[in-house]
Length: 135
Image 1 (cartoon, helix red, strand yellow):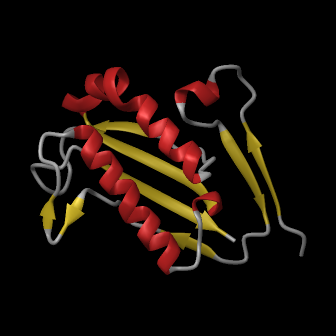
Image 2 (spheres, rainbow, N blue to C red; image 1 turned 135 degrees about the vertical axis):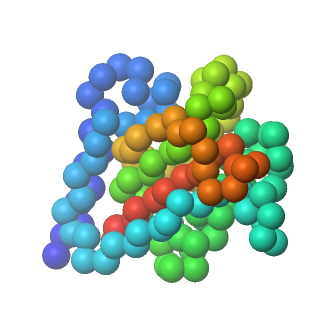
């Protein structure tokens, strides 16, 4: 079967925001569903109070899991972002560009949702990411 992936980004500015509107995957014989990944290291929340540090740790965790399962960032077809509501202003003002640059450098071109939530699994968690990859 020929593998085809088409990224849907029809509106100017989507790339600057760091997200896409959609993607069409025509192959998908294997799908990897990753549960939400927080900034957890050795059973504890890493970088308490540091949103950027937690974001990068979440992405490092996802990268580890992708590689362990034989996938790459370019295989990610859905990436959902969950941020504590009290972190939304910090995200839009301070760290959005760093996140976008990291995802672009990693080759991730996946649609998803950015959702503000009241709380996450552990009190010090500021963000969590959930990924789906297909090959």
